[in-house]
Image (cartoon, rainbow, N blue to C red; front, side):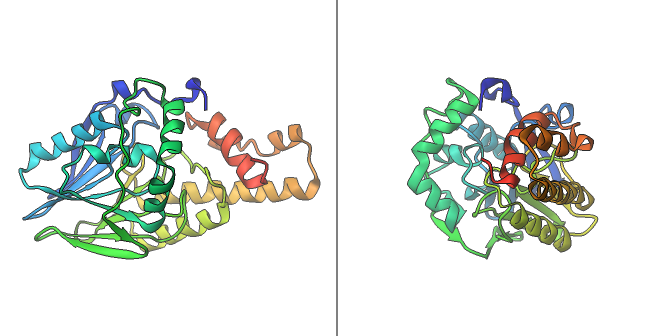
Length: 295
């Protein structure tokens, strides 16, 4: 991925906690209202005895901002840190958290971090550029792994962690605070519309099944914190579902008709989704090849 495709510069990112409910906060970029794709979101849940943080972000500077936002609210210890996937912008800041913070991953996420951290770090340096703080990162993977679900008691506040299927990685996790009807979904949902899914590993039909499952398990009042961008509602999930359904259908038609490359580009343009700032790159260079099997 070339520099021109960078949606933001890490050095410019400033994170700020936003209260969603009593003791539940999303930590989002300060410019969240100004663009449809910003830095990765984090969050935290405060109980009577401890804190659970969602995501450590890309580097020590951003991780420290998350820790700092927690400290503005409470002096309680950060007991748990959950990474919703192995992607570097969600977990590379793990090493900056206190040594007694318990890291929580899906089994597949831990495996990837343990086996290919250096490879992924090199990719992130290429994606975000030198001097973005990625070079200083150190691998820190899970102390606890989850294959299906788990619950964490923070003292008067319970947080449920679930794996409901493949969306962008094999280890996608969602973090639910059921009593407040809030869910953190990581890159399972990239950002609110007009953003659409990034099919980085293909497997669009599996992702579609997971999106439908997520939609069915929530209600119209659920506050959804996506991987990037502002908070979402259940109805917004239908935008991602509709995108994948149409993309899959057009790809099947293109294969059946044996279209040429130029004809495929025209047939799969899907102009109604072109309002997304990352449309040209993600749709044509990532998603279309993924569903056509031409990556």
